[in-house]
Image (cartoon, rainbow, N blue to C red; front, side, top):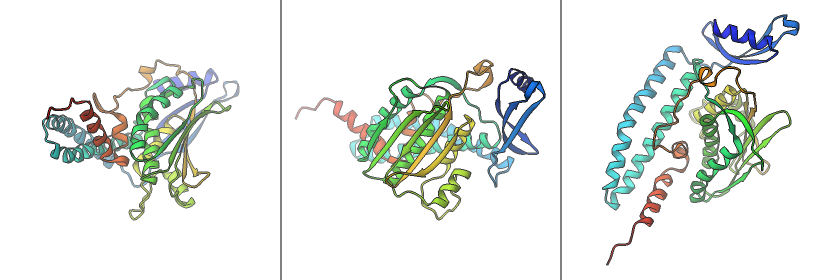
Length: 328
C-alpha cells in the first residue's frame, strides 16, 4: 500500500522514518533504520498503549467529547450575549459560568486527543516554525495572568530564530499544560522560569521550572512512564494534561522529562528533534484542525484550571476601565 511504498522509498534513499501501527489490537510507535546496501529495513517497535483502555471505551470517549463540544458551541455565545446586558452584581456569577465552560472545552478536547492517540489516529500538522518567536508571543499572553497570581514569569530565549518542524497548536498546548501545573504547584507567589535552547545534537529543549513543593522520585518516574497519576487520593494536580504533553512530545519523535529543580520544585523538559521537511506534501501527510474555534483564546482555555476566575475578572476590569465615566 502507500505506507509500504513510502517506507521502501525513504529507506532506499538512506532516510529513517517514524510512524505508528496496530498489531493484534496494540498500538506501537515505529522507528526504521535503512539496512546497508539495501539489504532490508530494520524496524524498532515501542508500545504506546495505555493500560485499561479498550477500543469501545476510546470510541465512547471521542463521541462524548464531540457532544460536549456541540453543546458548548451553543452555550458560550449565549453567555457572552447575557454578559453584555448583565448588571454589575451578576457579572461575578457569569465569570464562574464562563470559567467552567472553558474548563469543559479543555477537557473535551483533551479527551478526544487522548482517544485519538490511543487509537493510533492522532495526526500532526507539521510546519517549519520559528520556536523562538512562538515562545516569545505565547509568554507575552501568559504574563498578565501570572502577574495577577503574584508569580514572576522569567523567560530566557535565544537571540536567533530556532527553526523546527512542529505542530504549532500541540507545542503551545504542551507549554501551557506545564505552565498550568507550575502555577497550581505554587498557587500564589514564587517564580516560573521558561527557557528554550538548541542543542548541538540537533534537538531543541523547552524547560518549565517552578518553585513549588516538588514531587517524589517514585511519582516522578511513574508520571514519566505512564503520563498519569492513577491514585485517586493523590492531590498532585498532574493528570490528563501531563499525559497528553508526553504523547504530543513522542508524536514529534521527542520526549518529556521530569526532574527536581535546582532550588526545589519541579523542572519539566520537552525535547524535540528539529527534523527535516517531510518528503511528501505536508497537507497530504498530515491533517489540520483548528485549535478551539473562532474567538476562543487558547491561553484562556489551557490556563482555566490553574488561575480560575482571574481569567475573566481581570478582563472585565480592563473593559470597565476603557468605558467613559458617567456624569454625577
